[in-house]
Image 1: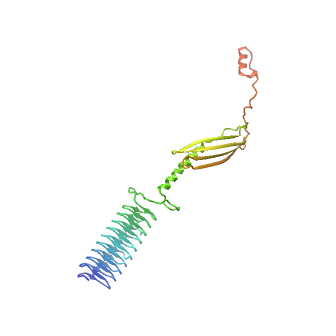
Image 2: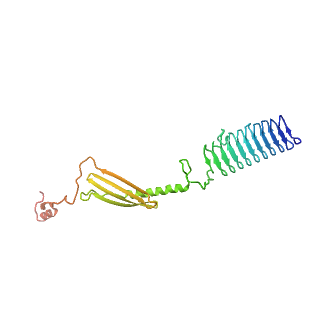
Image 3: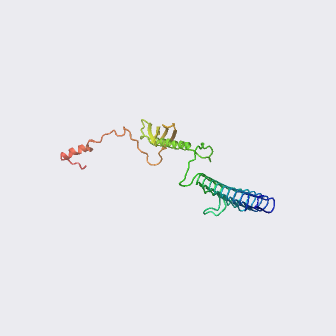
Amino acid sequence: MATEADADISNNQATGGANSSVAGNNNTGVSIGAEIQGGNQNVAVGYSSQIINGSLNNAENYGALIIGGGTGNTAIGTNAQVINGTSLEAVGYGAAAGWGNNNTAIGNHAYAGGNVYDRPTPSNNNVAIGHYAEAYGGSSVAIGDYSVANEANTVSVGQPGYERRIMNVAPGYYDTDAVNMSQLRRVDSKVDRVGSIAMAMSGLAPLPYDPKDPTQYSAAYGTYNGTGAVALGIYHYTKPSIMYNMAVAMSDDRWEKSARFGVTWRTGGAKAKVLTPAVVTEKPAEENTIESRVKKILAGEDVTN
């Protein structure tokens, strides 16, 4: 052991010179000012590194600090800190993890854990990776400089005003997979095709019933957001009050297809009289025409009857 280093209790080692201090059991302090205050199997390496109680903890680099009596914690980096928890990791200058379990902070001033801002409660299973990245939502992940994951079970790659794109994402397969832009564009294109088909279908319309020609045909063209479609329809009256119709439509982009079949019938009320060219065949009586009345008036005859 080096001169002026202090090791108390049993199986402890203090190496590195003045102000190194180790207490507890099976602990090791290395470098000037390294300090372990109790606990078991802890290692403090670096100037002013410090572990206060707990077991199986490792603090490395200048000012690295582990406090709270937890187990299996690691603080690596200048002024890296682990506070109150188990299985915590803080790696990087000023990185911190704490106030919960299984939190990991990697990057300068990254933070993962609880007891932050307006949430004075523990938070577990958070991961923050990046310069000033923060993850404290609970089972949350923050990736990238200044990214913030403040909601449970979320992954964040930025924050409002510092958004990022995620590149090289494979097409999603299962219902809960992420969707990439190629899939989204296909959906957008399909919406355009369906819209154009709807416009074309709406342009089909039958003419009034004609007993001499009960079958009719109709065609229409529609467009939506630059995508076009054509529609063809057929209408057939089996009687004046019943009409069957069928139509098909197809877009001009990837040949999206659609079809319909329907029937229309009239119920209730007085039956409408069907007008045909043969309905009006008789001429009005000569004496009742306007022309004959004018002639009578000019001749001075009485036309009041």
